Length: 469
Image (cartoon, rainbow, N blue to C red):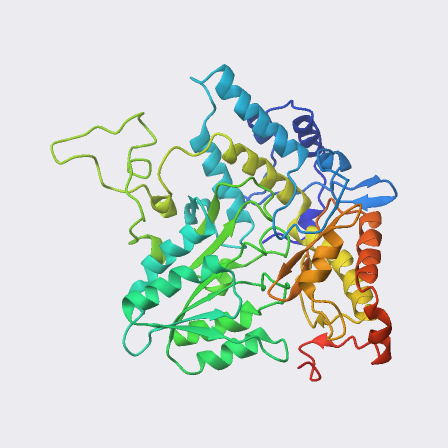
């Protein structure tokens, strides 16, 4: 889909457009007209490299002007800071409704633009027609469970998930299993850290109807090899459902078609740099062509894009759906605030190129991994570029206690604790000084435990190594 060479192609007009947006000018429609496209409809990306305070950054440092530097923020897996140009777009949208409520912009077209941009993040063969816009990832997975409920039959009635997997891609399957008399097959965290091997082993039982997985574990960034899993799913006729919230936008390109995914969903407030209020949903055409939406409304019906109000006849309102996955869109008008903000943020990501973002963040997490291992933390064998989870050796304070100590510093260092892991997730706002502060804080948080750690050899086993209990 997007190759590194594509991501390095220059586009001075796009660079200028983002600077205009950051200054409150230009407007989203003006910037859209400046977007160059290749023959296949893929994007050309500008090389936006800036130097600030001695740190090379992928984005102009002014994009993070509103981010408080009173704390050191390393929890982008929770939510990313809002880029200034995206904030300006949102402010302009709010002002527009206050000033001219009769003219707040074409939110329907903005939503369609968002579909196009999300499709560009999902690899070759995915197009805007494959994308639905819904309120949340849990809504998306409830849709997926409804669409795939027929897959659970007497001989194959299990839905496979991971231990500690995010609830958004578990709870809908719990309910489906209970309703259909199925089993929720929870794959335990593997001692060797190889999630794919554990999943493949469970698939061998040949009772799994749906594999509901992420590309990486949200607690520690551990990689799940979806290529290997998808090959098994194809051979066994198992539907693959992917919650890509913690991957798309920062981890690399997810090739939805090549994986044979039935569904790929992403909340927008994390690595897609959007506000809260929506999730984007890829659905395979074979699935959406006969799918029934979760809610019934006029916005996804044939002709709704041509009139203000659909006409009502003797039998009620028209029931034919618009083409594509938009038949699954949630009801109500698309948000005149969320859609333009998200479109701007997706433009930023596409301009930079996901692979270049991932490569930049990998440099940061590699340094964290090296230093954390030297301090005695257990580090993962393999993790995504933008998330690393540290697990504490027996002699250390608990992960929860270390996270608390970091948050109580005079200049707090913000990370997260998830199921026993200290989850550290940098983004493009983080500087070299931030990294130094984080590493120093981790060392100091060990406190009086340090001597005890060195007395037992200062173990720094990788998570899942043969010595890991």
